Image (cartoon, rainbow, N blue to C red; front, side, top):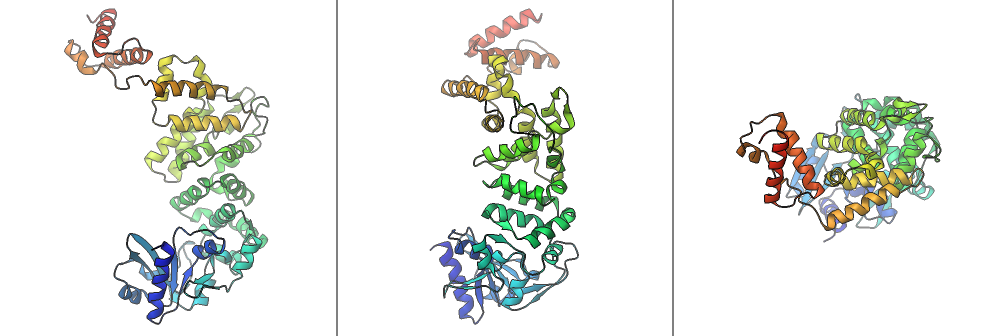
Length: 435
């Protein structure tokens, strides 16, 4: 049974028990646009206790707001009682809710295209807010007074951008004006929620349009002021004929194909160190400064340690390919064994294509990488600290120097067997005076 058929059966069960029930929200919008929804939400006149009585497996995730999750097989469906919301003291959640009828429920929702209901049993759309007209007009419009909608829930300021960018819609002028007017209140939203919205936007192909729209509506300067600081920071025309750092960053986002979150965030932040390092000679050590700034941004957004570490490593190393031809073979091989090497390569490619378009270094490294993958050298060191101890050495700082020399020689191909590695170790120890 399909997801939609299962959701329709939930509606049927509620109807058979004497309650009104509809598909609600984004799934209705998607159905009308010919897109298969990833999930189905259901709105009903049944109260939370009645919902729990009617279905065998339920989870009361937000029962105080009339929300119950109905579990069918291994799929969850959010079933919510029609409600109207009281004041939003925290600018995010209603202080109280009142159970109401379908019209009251629709009019407390965010945007018209998300405010329609759909009857899957009769194949009828219930549109009380002009959502179908705005779908046809490709508009994101707040339901009712835009300022009131945004003052209720400040996250809607960013969600307006996300929906407009993902759908390729415009934001209706009064709605856009309200976003600009209230942009400086976005700090009322938790960093985790802001990060989640950024992830939705940046992992979608419309990522560059989303960032442009955030900037045009004055939200970007409050969410990521380090990105707006890129505007007007000029770059050498030989390397960057496309324009300033902000323009280059948007070009990079346009060149990014389907990308995982950590990589695309690194694309956005890879030149974040240029504004503070800019001088007449260029942007000395901007990747190092950028890595520190990226770490601060990731902490501010409350990203996980893993997310932060990956983004910072990519930003910090995004210039490495420029030195590839000067690297010793062992250094290049070490780089190619890094867990994030393929992401780093993609970041370099994006950076190059979005500027002068010179892929010489990229091609050089990737050709070496193909050879490396075809005939991979031993990754595990053939000599370890145990071998040094067996030869009578006391552990200390010299261990690291000796083992690094041995591993580098191994990567260079000086030896490739355990016996030859130990023979080379004895040579090194003799040379260093440990024999």
